[in-house]
Image 1 (cartoon, helix red, strand yellow):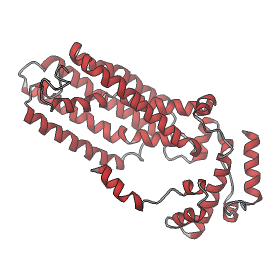
Image 2 (cartoon, one colour):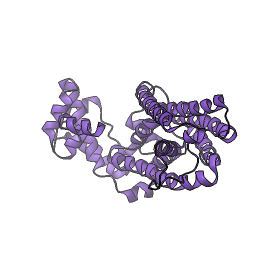
Image 3 (cartoon, one colour):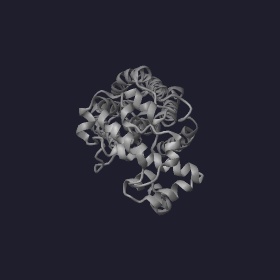
Image 4 (cartoon, helix red, strand yellow):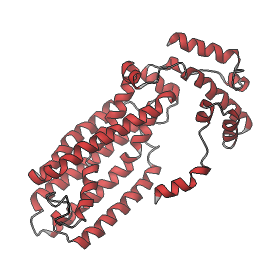
Amino acid sequence: MPVTFLLAVMYWLPESPRWLLMNDRYEEAERNLLKLHTPEEAAIELAQINAQMQIDRTLPSSYWHMFKKPSYRKRSLLAIGTTCSIQFSGILVINSKHSVDICKTTQDNPYKDYGPTIYAGLGYGTQKQLLLFGAWITLAFGAGVLALLVVDRMPRPKLIGGGIAGCMAALIIEAALVANYAASNNTAALKAAVAMIFIYVVFYEVALDGTQFAYCGELFPTHLRAKGMSLGVAGICLMNIIWLQAAPTAFLKIGWKFYLCFIIPGCLAAAMIWFTFPDTWGLPLEEIAAIFGDENELYHGSLDEGKAGTLGANDGPHVQHNVEHKQMSA
């Protein structure tokens, strides 16, 4: 349903002014900016975007250069490291195990030998599993909405590292409860184990799910952002293959100990991100570029230059001189 709704309204979504300028659709770009700014502000931003694009066209943007150039390589490794580290939280396996839990074990069910599952393994019947799964999804949605109030109020590494640490805390308690009480009749312990799964998803949705994409987008300059985001998503897909292919056999053979495969690297990843990853929260492109040593790849025009700037080939001597300077510096 969400995809259908998005497709239905996509026709009315405005194109990015930067993309329109990249495709020489100057008038449309100006109209879209005028919907957001006063005419003077729109003219300045249009000139600045156009000037920056002239510089971007002179810069390498292939996947090869994203790993060849040291500053680009650092950005790329940070993006992949962020998304892969977040998957150490175990969300892929926990989410898929919910789906398995509500499937009946039949001869045609390929997961009939999946081993102990979260709710079924704790002794809950099929109907209760369905109710708990629905409640878990509803809570995840609510926590995802709540993330809108949090994502721009904390430094990125602290939010991501703290979110992973929160998930690990819930997962540690979950593993201990499953290890000691899954086969028992201790109702309180079983309820606590379920509660940990609910607490876990709150940490994940509030601190990690959307923040990882915001952080990946901020790590890259404009001419590399699309490829940088694709690298981050590739990291998620890679971890998806690894964890979900291993999970059925792992839970069957080692049971709750499989949680340790998330807890140990997850705790290390949380500390690494918290203490070593650069913060991009609220920083302009110039300051982010300075973190990676790419200040010479940005347009540094003044406000007066922006006011005087025009589109196309008439960008003026200031912009042309700036572009030539960037090319020589690069």
